[in-house]
Length: 256
Image 1 (tube, one colour):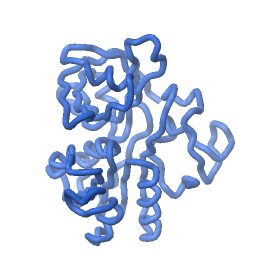
Image 2: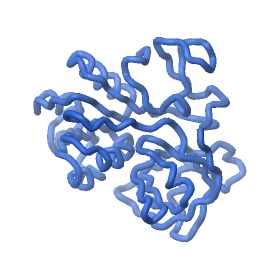
Image 3: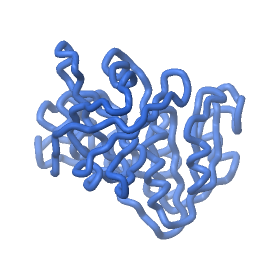
Image 4: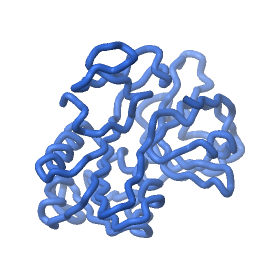
């Protein structure tokens, strides 16, 4: 596993909607290794916040040595990151995790929910096949939807029915008769379970990226364990570390 710890320079920082920020950061070494679905651990200046904050990679721009993150302010740590200005630097470790393995044959369905939407954007850019993206939001604040439309057909589900299908992403998939040969998904655990079940019933593989609180981010603390059907080589028990064996898993290997 390639782990590089160094400083990243903020290129831009924009608020997409209340509490959701989009940031481009420059660092050649991290950008060169980055893959869709991986994440970066960011270390804070406040010494009372010892643990890094893991944030998924949204886009990769190798030509300009930079990566993009889109994140929600969920506490004091992410709020500190949200207040960084262009030219500021932040210490980071990454890229971490296994990332997605793009399949370019047949048709692909990408399913994202909430803050699980950003990690799918770079994947949508890199896939060279027929793509349908289904995005789930709470309301009309459909951040990143227009950007996905540059690379794929986009369907939207909102819980309040303000945009697209009223309900969840699975309702949207069913109502639009979406068919695919592979599924890639990222979002809340209940959504991932339902997407995985739908894919299993259709007999197609589903790759899911799990959202989980992490401590070290490099597999040492065993703080982000998920149950699996088979024993793993690290602990010899039926589990896996989301930060290293994941965050992307073939859904059929997980013990939901």
